[in-house]
Image (cartoon, rainbow, N blue to C red; front, side, top):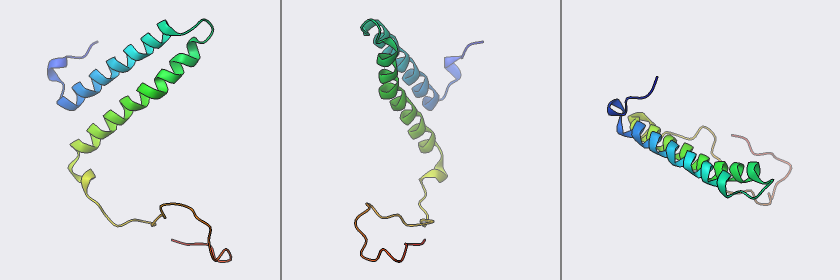
Length: 94
């Protein structure tokens, strides 16, 4: 059973293209890997290209859902960075 690419949405075509490019990157990593380093090279390529592929699919999925773009109140505000606290006796609460 294969995919009928004529019936795929633009977002699905983007995901399919991204998957093929990821697979090509993995295949290239296998071919270029030095002896004994194949798995490490493939894992590095997967980390680089695989996460890029997932980010592409995530962006397409979120962009296709109208409600996902709405902003609402934060459940619990989070500071941008952790710095030294002036009052260590009182923990911060939401």
